[in-house]
Image 1 (cartoon, rainbow, N blue to C red):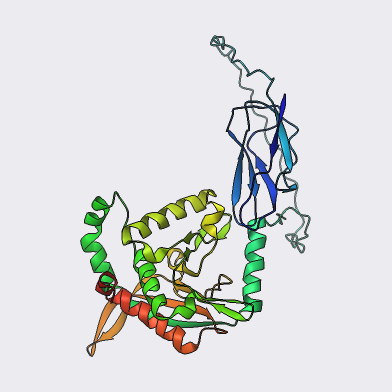
Image 2 (tube, rainbow, N blue to C red):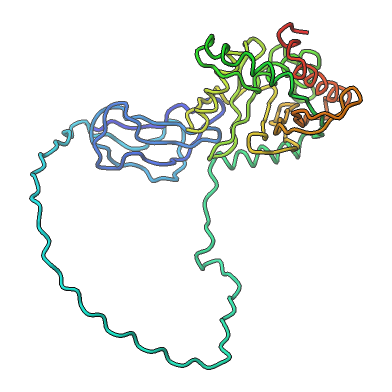
Length: 361
């Protein structure tokens, strides 16, 4: 009996996918619940497993666009599992001696007319093998479409500031080992400091946690915090739902887990939706300053950057401090410049004095 393999439910607002690759081929014997296929959607890859054990048949071609419930292939349950035949031992064969021929003298080169000029390379052609054409993935197409839509729709403006990371670095160095022991290896990184600072600042400046829907502004009393993650497939933004209710340890665990699963394409669709504000950290790649683009329909995104020792003035003295530039891009349609600047100053205050984060000040 042939059991059909069909496209599973893909999640919120998704109706189609592309057959990305078969992990098994027609004629292969597969086990029940073995992963046999990857589908690529606008947001994430979806793994499809075998509905039963048997021989895989009638696989549709890679690159085919399919709808929810569409037929992908079949599994013949009547096929017998292959048996493994014993391997006979192989006797060692002694190599026979090989005589080495006497090399012939190389022919003398013919005289070349002088002065000989090297040929001038012609202009590269598109068909000379030095160009490659690769179809854009569904994820890359979605990223491109969303970024362009953000520029076309929102009135994006960016404001900048810099943060002295001395206190955060000192606190982290003093308590990191104890923190990791108490919380089962959860790392104490700087992202959790900024996540908590953003949550605190959004309480004071809720317009940056809002969005426009038609002729209305939707304000929220919760924070679903998106954390941008760069992967080989492109940029994805998994969401920490109810981040305002999370502790430092839970923030660190979730951020680390999302990062790992984003890189292997195993995030679930509900983990990529319903964000209200985002953070992106170009500093891990060495970026010193940037202007992040909004993750529409959100109204704000905070850009973190590399920490760099720089001379600054403190109490009339020039001293060296670990400094980070930060950038806030916002939708000027609903966020005024005063609110945006004040929000970023609030984030700066909270990170520069982490005790405020602990005391909710």
